[in-house]
Amino acid sequence: MLTTLLAPTGGSATVAGRDLARDPSGVRERIGYVAQAGGVDPAISVREELVTQGRMYRLAKDEATARATELAGQLGLDGLLDRKCAALSGGQRRRLDIAMGLTHRPQILFLDEPTTGLDPGSRADLWDLVRTIRAEHGTTVFLTTHYLDEADALADRLVVVDHGRIVAEGTPRALKAEYAGSPGATLQDAFLAITGRSAPQDTTPVAV
Image 1 (cartoon, rainbow, N blue to C red):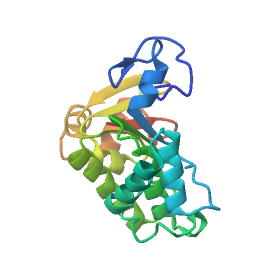
Image 2: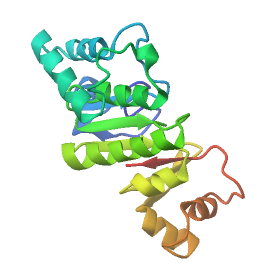
Image 3: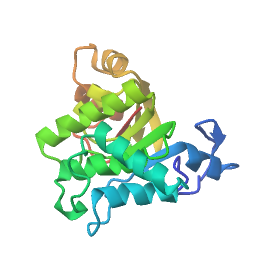
């Protein structure tokens, strides 16, 4: 809903300073979105994919080419620009997905389950990338994840959504202190206390 892909069923929201219901085009201009499944074309090169994305955002060809080179350097893809997307590893493909989401320098980058299916090394690399995007580019990263250690490691603010409703929000440290009795507890302990469950089921923490 916050990325304008689904119509809200109620309530209101402001995303990147734009009203979600009244100005969805304004929202889309100011956000980047990386879906869980990704969206690269396996038949073309990394360079072609990034340039095409830039052109779709109405960049001139020279500007789109320069932006592709810039993003490749920032996201560790500069040695892969002429490689077919089909030949990328899972971690490299996720980096390309994120590069595409950053093409137009969005204020907010939405990442939907970005580390699902990645090996531990690629997952750690992606964590570092999220931190870099936030620290060096000033981009707000809105991250949905089922991995509680991921939310604990990356979130400045965490929102727990249970069956479509917000049931808790705050910093990971504050939530652990309030619901698990200690800021040194695990987020898993806090999660179980918040939801009243003995094991996680369909609840999605949202890290921002």
